[in-house]
Amino acid sequence: MAVRRSLGIFLAIVASYFGMSTQQIIIFGLLLLIILFIIIPVIYHNSATIQRHLVFLPWDLPEFAVKWPKNVDFDLPEKEGLRGTRNFYLETDLCPNETISEKSFETHFQSGKPIFIYLHGNTGSRGRDHRIEIYKILSNLDYHVIAFDYRGYADSSPAVPTKTGVVQDAISVYKYVQSKCASSPIFIWGHSLGTAVSTQFVNDMSLTNNPPEGLILESPFNNIYDEIKLHPMSFLWRKMPLFDWLFTGNLDKNDVGFASDRLISNIEIPIIILHAEDDLVVPFQLGQKLFKTALKHRSSKAKPIQFIPFSSVHGYGHIYIYAAPELPEIVGKFVTNCLSDTWNDTRSMH
Image 1 (cartoon, rainbow, N blue to C red):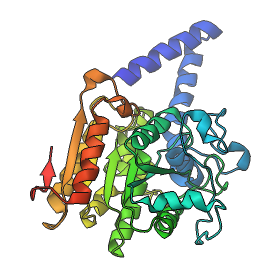
Image 2: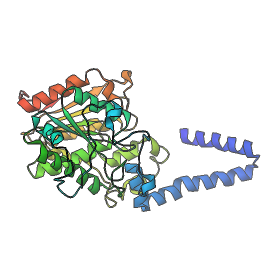
Image 3: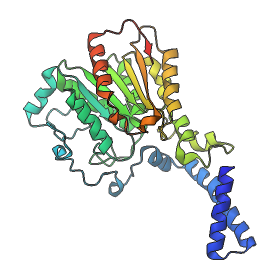
Image 4: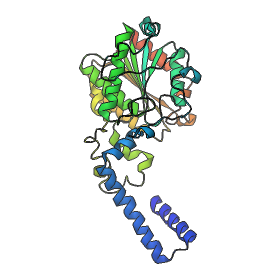
């Protein structure tokens, strides 16, 4: 009803501005409906490129690579207020034995302090403000932080992102850190789309008995199919017939079919889910669905999973959970419990 009312108002404005007759308004309206509800859905359904672009939000061509914010100097991360940082590059399919020349930098990984690998969501790079604020929180807790950009983002290689590709990037970073960290514990922090990448790669590592110490999922969705249906960009189409077939039917075939709810049962390490009730990008209910799936299907020997909601009165939305004053305490307690294994035999907390 709201869509029809909005469309009617739009047509009235166009008709008034261009002085269109009633017949012209009808023809224009029909053409608009055909474009919106037939042509666009059919093109989307049949285009792997468009689907990848809308899921990952980079562009295949080098000149369209996502380098936002534009004023970030990736070679000088200290300009963003990050102390003791260094920028470096890895070959994702090789063990980079000589990637960093400064051995002193590598020895910091062997200090025994926890290491967090941060996997960001789509849009922008590792240099976005809200991501930097998370790094600062972790750094202030005296943890090491590794943040990286997937292929196709920022100053990484301009390859076409796919689920397989970005998961391989995460695995390569993880194995690199493992090769340098001695016995230092490794934790994973994923945000938004990065939660799906994190869940997939931690699942893969768990199946090879090589999981990290713990997993933090900030603003996660249960699967990409529900996320697309509830995303604000899909409001025009989500109630139309054949929506699932047109908009999500080819996601698996096109290698963008993330489904954390199919994998989380394989992950037995401790997990925290952080989600704001007023998240409009990844609805709160999708984080709850993932949590409930984990409670139902994880094995009895799995370590606890905790769901921590943030009230909508704070206005944290999709990217401002870092502003929660209790967040450092939440993370610090989680790390301490993981390392000491003091869970009091509790499988789930809410």
